[in-house]
Amino acid sequence: MTKLMKQFLLALMVSLSALTAFNAHALDSEMLSDIKDGVVTMQIQDPDRNVGYVVGDVLTRHLIISIKKPYKLIEESLPIVGYQKRYRGQVLGIDLSDIKHTSFDNGDDVIHDLTLSYQVFTNKTVVKHGAMPTEYLHIINVNSKGKEVVKFRIPSFEFAISPISVFGQIKIEDDISGYRGPLLLDNSLLKKRLKALLMIGLISLLGLIYMLGKHAWLPRMGGPFAKTYRFIRKQKNLPQGATPEGLKNAVASMHTALNQAAGSSLFSTNLDAFLAKKPAFKAIKPEFAQFFSLSRQVFFEPNARHQVGNDPLQWLAQFCRRCRDCERGLVPDQLPSDSLVAGSQNAINAQK
Image (cartoon, rainbow, N blue to C red; front, side, top):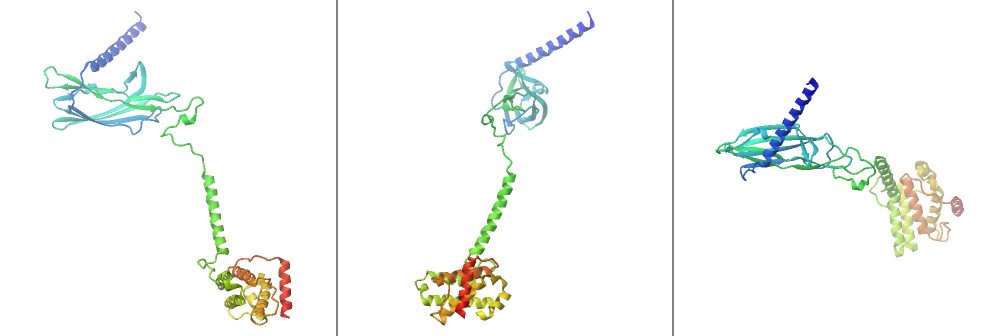
């Protein structure tokens, strides 16, 4: 018999011996009766999720097993590292990669601390069912005459093995897992743009409130022209506002505001000195001449022409608002140039 033939026969005998030992072990577990209730208690800490595992992942379960005396664990029945379980003749693809076992005597019982680590080494193009297999521990009654041996069942833990990559075309809504997370688009640029637009909008709103605001809660909003503008607007809405007396009150309040802004009594004779001191008001210089002609007509010459239109109170409100804008450092609205020139010329002629 050749050397090669001898090696082949030796390998065949070893394989048959291992298979026979495996069948004997499996047969023993199947033939043994279950242990009585109350003899063994167990606490199991399984993985916190049962989906989303891929090839190479390690799942660990921790068991605390308490066995009452006179029953004793047969440690040779503990799961074997590297042993591959089968289901319907097919390898499950779950390998017991590590086992840690400690025990201590607790008086009436023995506590076994058992940690089992299983590694996934299979992969499919679709989600595949996996399980930490059911394990059976053999327990012997050391006080019985026949050395009674029974079994205790550790239940399986089922989970899902996900593919590393998707095969073929699928509908994404059919492949959604709670552990996959949503498919997010990068919106960082949109967030930056939105923040910039919100900032611009806020600044614009504050500017609009500053230009059109009637209250004095912002800097330079509580000047004399702002207060006078509020007074004239209220005067317009009163029934007596359109009367000569109401117009006289409005013009008087405007004179008060001009005097406060100039720091002294302001007339047409010292207007240039005021404009030199307050250059922001130069843009509405022609309207000062119209205002002084209106004031002369209201207080001194009822028959004089004032050149401010048929609604003097409305014109006065606009003039005061433009003075308020100058007071706040804003550029006042420009009236049509023709009307400014004509009004200024008419006011000068009226003064003459």
